[in-house]
Image 1 (tube, rainbow, N blue to C red):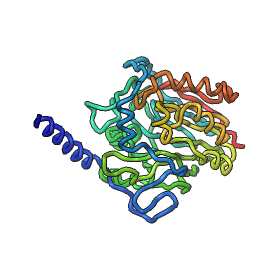
Image 2 (tube, one colour):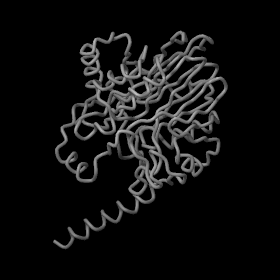
Image 3 (cartoon, rainbow, N blue to C red):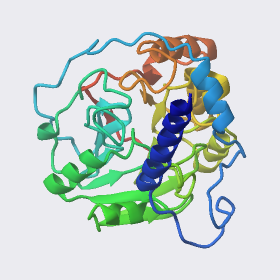
Image 4 (cartoon, rainbow, N blue to C red):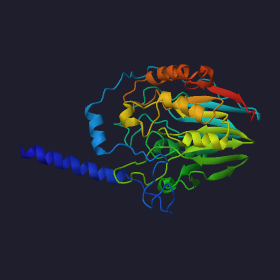
Length: 348
């Protein structure tokens, strides 16, 4: 039986080695309310599950059904230009949107790879193709990155976007050093509540409840955030990845009306495990109400099997939640991949 011991030892050593190699650099800056000098913390005090929770989740998982290529619609026509008085949101997949506003073309959390993983031969696999090919994109001016997880910061995609368009990247605190390792220097870091001016857009980092890591030794050493874009009083909110907390009501009280919100609805089951870091469809509607959103669009669903909810479950549960809270279904769109949605920019 000694071979079992050596096998276990070998696997452990390989895990530690790869965990070290994959770990990214951390933030090196002053302490704050959400940074203790070594790690960042959530505004609601919640933490992602520890190793025991992860093991429990792995042993008792009840994953719902996913089918490869259950939807294969890919946009065939080019993306039309947008008028100055409008904003156009095109859904690529997962949390990847093309936002066209105020003369700028902005990508959020771009992922075009087959897997959201450090390796393209193992890890969560894409269950449907991107709704928009990279060849169909207009010249990209800005890329907003919410955090460093593999389904939001995809190295292959980031490098290709850099090569094709040479945009500026805006990333949370600490992520800039990782981009520098990739050979990307046109990157600017942002903190919660910090504002950056780009053209006539004010970009603000806003809090969320999540965690970060790319390996075993960089847990919470870089920040995670959402983004609030303001153009002449018109406000667009990209939530990134987040659990539910009082920060949404605080944001609603501080910002007033949010004209357009992009809110995650997937990867929430089982809720005892996922709730500190991902909101459910029910909570997504609460976020919609908390931030006083006039219009919301769902994201983070139906592309990668990251939790136990199936490919159709988030959308079905969102419709139930909208009915529960009395929100018109047209006010919280479940977008089709590859489709563009145009909204008139009429600020409150």
